[in-house]
Length: 481
Ligand SMILES: [Zn+2]
Image 1 (cartoon, rainbow, N blue to C red):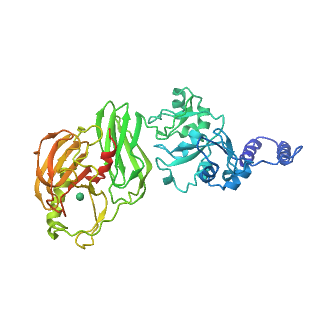
Image 2: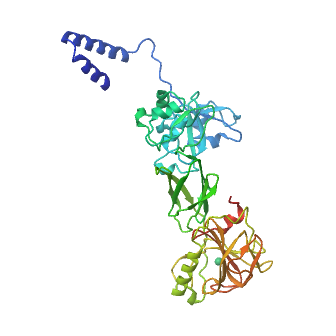
Image 3: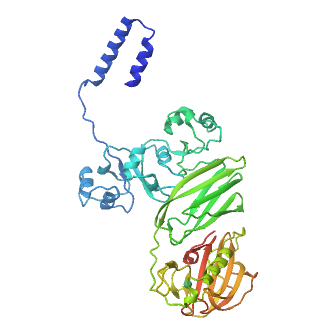
């Protein structure tokens, strides 16, 4: 309406007053006809998006999934509670009245934004917000299950090669063998001159690609071990076909990336056990050989590990919160912080004790010492000696420290496994290795004891990543590449 009047004003500048009146009449007539009902008026039927039933679905689960009531779902689809569902059946979803298309669910991939999900699925951003009850961008964290609507017969979409610095969207669409205006429409852009180098654009394809990431030179980014827990280990793996410098930051942790060859870089990180549960931005930055920097944020959920609280422990007051403890902590923090660039472990780790199930205390439990109010958390896994007293190297590595008679740790050994991953063995009775020894998985390294701040014979087994203690059970239960 506004556009129409502006156009008319432009046009009438060069026409006579009588022509002007004639034009106004025609326009008024068009406006009247366009609002008058012509012939029978059809009531506008409400549309509903459809859900395609898959094996294992039940009517009540589907109602719950889409925030609807079972009664409404049955009524809208002409069903009753005894109706059988078959895979492939289509159900209209009453809670999403006004939307259209086929509903599907997927897990939010890395690099997603509301805009990129909307472009790929060709759904209205408003519909995505409504179908998922989104109230903030932080709710699109990686790994969250999200409901998408797909318009039937809409083309499948795949990520386009991203725009280089200074490259226009027009140029990129020609290189992709696509019609620029078609791509502008599919990507919901106002104008091809608005193309941005960091934005993700899609083109029609025979197969749909769930990738939402388009950064020049990058092939893939994988965040491993999601969903993360407090005290968890995570690994970011970046594959690129040109040299890039990678930086990442998540909840105060900055993994150090090591070149593994073949264009692959890996960075290990450890989530602090005291990190508050919540959604945190993972910020990643890539700088290529020309010095151009690309950056993106994606939210990551850090879930609760439900750490226990131990009953207050009574230990030698000399070993708690003293200058000696602080000095010792500093020495150990420094020894487990450097990142040596060679991975010395492979596959799943062995238990360092003879009985892996003889667990006295798990990682992360909150503790206090001698009625002192200061909160500590247990930085390792305490293993007893149910079957024997031998202590083994759980994986290949180099012994970087053999420390006798420490105030807190007693007799302790530190092994560097490479890529910023270290293990520490505390309260030992004796040592079976020396500093500088290269150890094989399963090699005897010491004997369980009760030296240092210990209330009875046990092995305190600790895994540190770049100086942060992480849950050792993660490393005993799953393989890291
Ligand atoms: Zn312990």
